[in-house]
Image (cartoon, rainbow, N blue to C red):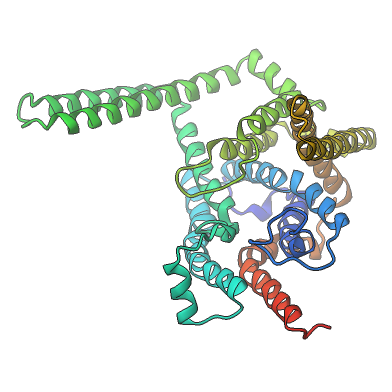
Length: 416
């Protein structure tokens, strides 16, 4: 098996879309001062005197589909890489491409972003200012947590670990051996807890804690192993083929359903702490990754998405559901302002249905547009795909600092 990706077909449109989605993130962060007052986040980002509803709508539109699209593409290219390289090579590649940048640049963000936000709040950077700010216990939620905008790398690492475990346990013999070894380990743990044989035993408090950890671990491994081996077995049957056709049809009902359910569970909480994980948020992006992973084996859908009839239909329907999201969001804002709470739940449901549908349909539509438009190698597309990742990783400190710096210049009268 060749490990040189250049000897295989390259998806130029998807490469371009991945880079485009990354660069749009810079646009989103750079535009925040022009509607931060409208969103009531002035404590997090500076607010320009002239707030723009148009930029807010553009932000919302891009936000609906940008990261779902990115995770879908990440899943697709993960499967592509696993098909063209060994699992070991895949792990090494992901460590270099995802884990190392997260450790290096995540550490830099954890140091820089709080300093930049203190400058934004205080108007100056000095040791005294920083020490006084930390002594007062200022909340630095606006920095986006320790790793800031690199949360997507953290999510990807978690998803990749799950993917590797799933693939390893997909073989029934491996699953059986793993389950047996896990429960044997649990038996040994119980012997240790109860002081059987050569083991001295432990205190009641420690015994209870170890027993809980042991049973949860054993049950989790058993469920994961049985799920992986069962799905792998079913996937090779006619039932699996039928399920794949249903999932990867031009009417993505199952993906929309999953997105809507997880959006309902997640609610308005889009926080991305390192720990404890925001599980509904992680699962929301994971379903797009999983869909993209399976899309590699169902590439016929990409060809269908490129057809004019499918594209036109997708774009019309996605525009309609996105408009429904805007209308329902506007009605919700008016209802909350007027105190009419009796029908809020109805419009919240409509909003979530419209938002989840728009996220899926716009994502698939844009995949089709880029694949239909960029059919061959283009230098700027290759450059975009290769460079946008690193540009996005390093952009936030610069964009945030410039936003605060310009805001302070404006307050001091330099921009009049």
